[in-house]
Image (tube, rainbow, N blue to C red):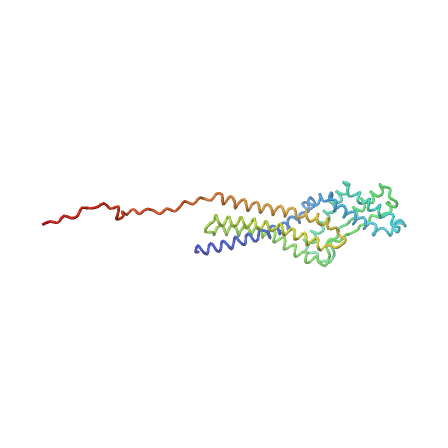
Amino acid sequence: MSRRMRSGLSAVLIALSCLLVPFGALSAWAAYGLSDTSRYVTTMAPLADDPDVRDAVADTVGNGIVQEYGHQLDTYVRRGTITPFVHDAVRSFTGTEAFRTAWNEGNRAAHDAVLRALRDERDRRERPVTVDLAPVTAQVKAQLAQDHVPLANRIPVQHTEVDLLPAQQLGRLRKGFHVLEVAGFWLPIAAVAFAVAGLALAARRRRALTATALGTALGGALLAPAVAVGRSLTLADLPAEVSQPAVGAVYDALTATLRTASWILVALGLTVAALTWLTRRPRLPFRRRASTAPTAQSRPEQPPPRVRV
């Protein structure tokens, strides 16, 4: 293989490697970072103390209790006198340790339900993925009774299922999740393999290594605006009744690992490029070798030949 062909093939492989860096990081984060239940619960746990999330939970659960069980109460509900007590009790409940426990358990149950639905391809029944909010309702009822709210003991604790994934979208979501799992495993491996092959074929490996490092840093830098664009699109598509600050807090918590990976790729690429440049060998100036043959001026003058008579 000629030197020019090796250089061209090396450049193509290195470019493919750098192009796969952001896609590999994104797919690996989606396939493995979000699919681990324990990691997901740990990530979501600090949001139990977030004011926007607590307000959103208080409004959602409070309205749900009044709407779901209001017809089973007395005229206090129809007059609207008990509604402020319910909302205040739920908001007070969100500041307790019991709420943090219920928050973690609710996230764990929801995550487990979603993963089972996405991974169980044998279940072809068209039914939505739901989570039961009965434990939260029981905690709120106990808080209302402790505060001596009228008719609090008459609130029934029933199994209230909230839809997480619609039934008509399960098939498409299963296929997408399977693609993410495959891509999350193979794309990072392909990026590394292309980089190694490109460096092995390069005629000037130091220059190729510098290009690979800078391309990796650029690919990592592209993740940050991608996360920001995803956040804007997510908040723009929300219904009017959904709290945007609460969803934004959840989005930021889930993408924190992706943002960290972006900075790591940028720092790693720039560090390798800087070390490659600093450790380069200085070029010696080219010196033309002096000719060893004597010139006409340096030749010693010889006496004229003698002429015999």
